[in-house]
Image (cartoon, rainbow, N blue to C red; front, side):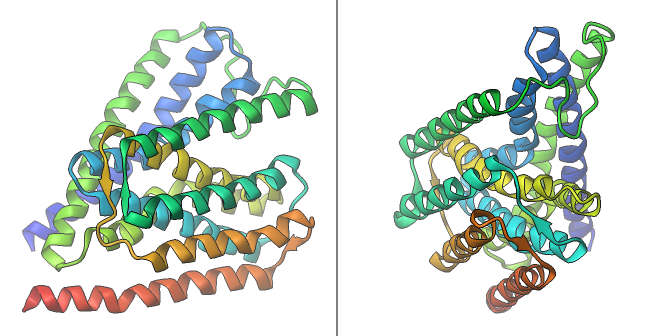
Length: 328
């Protein structure tokens, strides 16, 4: 029991550090970027977008460095399934989501392509450094393309979605540099604690690391996205709810897997083809909704949530089997 308590402290403490660390780092980085003369539009599409993906990225990088590829890739695949099935599903149950944004309509086909590419790369259940570099190159082109598209179609705005811009970025600059440093340290410690706790939990319960990544780790690192999407749905800003899920999934595949694979090649130990099929199938289900401008209504939201519950039910025999095998 003391060991389980220590593992719980590691996992919960790691998640808390990741949450606050990402917030501090993004605030510090945004102020620094504005101080250097970057526009709020560019900062929002680059610093904020990458910063909010850092918890997943650092958890997967830490796992890949520890030769725990199952946790690294399970975190990404589980997060992508959670983002569409649970987060969008619950958001639609709160408030039907109508899609109007051109960027979201363009991003979903890109997400389908990225999901298919990940399936192809994982055909041998391995991500090499070259494949990681390829994915990172994809996210660079994606961010650059977003900047060019928004600059052509939207007026320059002095705001960043979901953030308050400081009127004078030079004011309290040392404080924001401190936030940047403190956030980086918190993210590093949080990712280390979470991966260590997840590995120990898998060892004690006799579970595969991939199952821990697909469930506990992905749900934990996906909590900020869940809160953002539910609040957006409550405020009837559907584009933010859907854009949050789609953008997060794109960054998970190209930035998180790409960075982790570039740092250390990964074996997808414990990941099944069925996990990839569920992720890809859910992405395909989004296409008719966003392409035709239809509403993601409560019935469809219920369907997405039901799919997630069914997926967890599918994983449950695996949990039981591995636990029984460990007991023997």
